Image 1 (cartoon, helix red, strand yellow):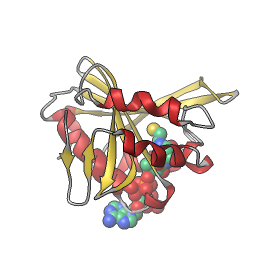
Image 2: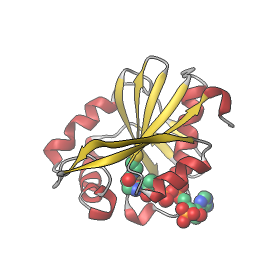
Image 3: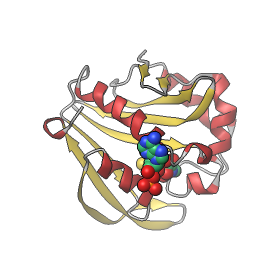
Image 4: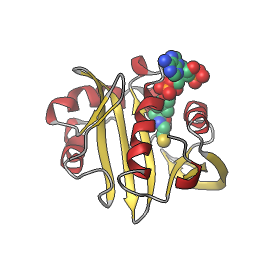
Length: 173
Ligand SMILES: CC(C)(COP(=O)(O)OP(=O)(O)OC[C@H]1O[C@@H](n2cnc3c(N)ncnc32)[C@H](O)[C@@H]1OP(=O)(O)O)[C@@H](O)C(=O)NCCC(=O)NCCS
């Protein structure tokens, strides 16, 4: 099980004790707006994230990690690894946003992905209206690669999906 450390954060497997706080931020409409999980989010629905968290980052499929500052769960990050490529996901509770925590956490995850895991490419698929994550990915060096039109069915409507990609050769530690 991988645990990563940054100056302010620990990025570690989710535990059952994290789930009540995780459900609270997942049910915040601002946080959930561009995310695909079912609403309302319940403890039963998120229990699987703990067993998925037991796998090491880089194991095939989605692996979730808690982003914590001391005892406080700020959010979560995830990698969906397929071979030498992975998709990235990130969520912060509203109170934890606007402080650079997502950038700090993802920079550590990318360091692990392109370092220890030797991945070739990491990408994110986002709703183009999600300006906060677009800014975050751009700051981290991801390139906007294009938009797949009405490619994602999200809470009753077809939405565009923007692709952002970062190659190992482009990444700056
Ligand atoms: C996507 C998401 C994680 C981005 O969070 P964020 O707080 O904007 O990103 P960061 O933690 O990197 O913080 C960056 C912001 O904090 C500011 N900031 C304040 N102190 C900072 C510091 N010490 N270091 C860096 N940035 C700092 C930056 O200026 C920046 O503000 P800006 O975006 O207005 O320019 C967040 O919006 C979220 O959880 N959204 C809901 C879930 C979601 O949609 N996820 C994406 C699906 S893939």
